[in-house]
Image (tube, rainbow, N blue to C red; front, top):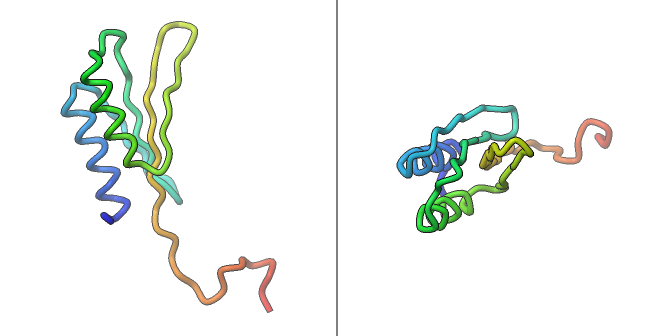
Length: 92
C-alpha cells in the first residue's frame, strides 16, 4: 500500500489528467483533494473519476443549488505508533 502522501498526490494527478482542476490541502490527520466538476463531463470520464476517488479513504460530491459541483476525497495520514494508544485521559 502506498504512503498516504503518495496516494493523495496520485489522486490529484489522475484527476488533473482527465481535465479537472484540483486543490490539495494538508491537514494534521489527513490530506484533502477537491476538484470542480463541469456539467459537461462525459460518462466515460465519470467512470474514470470514480475509479480514482475510490482509492481514497473517503470521497463524495457536493452539489449546490447554484449548479456548482465539487468532488472531494480524503486520504488519512498514518498515525504515529506510541506506547499508549488509549490517549492522555487513560494513562496509568
